[in-house]
Length: 454
Image (cartoon, rainbow, N blue to C red; front, side, top):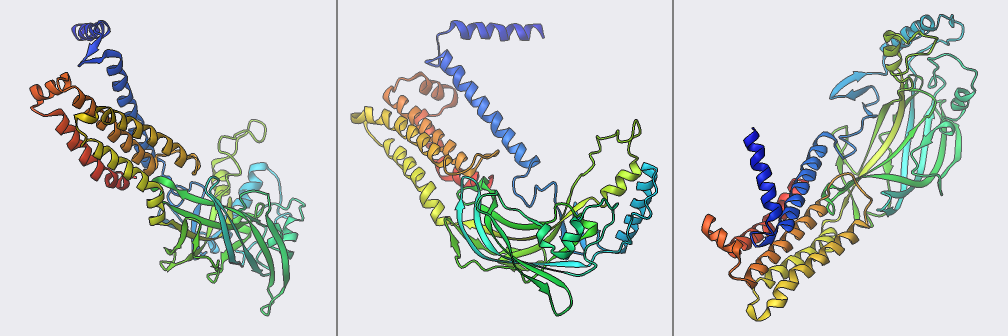
């Protein structure tokens, strides 16, 4: 072991004393090696993060449980019943544990409980426009209709003297929230209310505002975006209200194309392929953190109470969603074609003779700087993301091709270059021909391989 470290130390001293390494300065050789190791390290880390921390909304949504036909919820690929008679049993158990946990008698404070009747939510989105790619938002507007009965609002927990439940019974939408991106220029106002022919209450609201686009930019500029409009109640939990999205909800926006995107059909949870999909979701609220252990003196909350409460601590969500796909031809001609022509110029430069040595050496460096400025321009058009996009990989490939062409030009200018001699002596390869072969393979196969791995 000592001899090994001794050799390492001797090699270090050798590099320090040696001014040139393979006819390149030692400092430059070490710099290239350090940059290569750093690039490979961050690339592998990015690949690992993409595997362990998914990017797209459908895969990575830790606080979302998808409902199926509003009668069951799906979690970890398992169907778990929620709105059935077992819910009444869970509420009964919770009430008993609540009184035992806090050593109080609240039988008179608890109202009779039964599974709430479905409250039907109908979305009609009649306008979508103005996609802002920097903030990943768009403007959408339409109407939302809610229909509910007298038994649609329950109270499974202790009565706390609030009139919020009474306000909800009178107008369900008045106490509900939509997922507006910001508070600027948003509209949510009542346009009608009453009782329908079945004796159920209804109210209709007009909405308009900015909503978030869940964009997966890994394959940019051939990316997709998920568009979601949701309605939820910020106070009333899932055991007290059952939001069920009407299957007749629709997105009737007049424009098939929107900026650089176009509407795309997608497979809904029902298995049907439609322009828009509807669904019901339950989001765990985590109202009581498990790390919070001291509530009553030195007595912590029991595991039985925590488990019972967590089985009921959900927020109901009604949702309509659709998919946008960036136009392939538009993305190709806007972002890819300039790179293609840059690479073609590099390939043509390789054909110059000794009569144009200055152009032969200067062109790869010029193209490299051009690529750098082009990447800065493209990155200004999209938000900062925590993963590597297809375009980032393409630009890195373009940088590599420009450097390979520059290396070939340097050897071309100096035929007696030591690197070429070493390649012929130890590898039996011609350096220029090898570089040109690698250049051709990377230029042709590289973009497809990078797209497949994005």
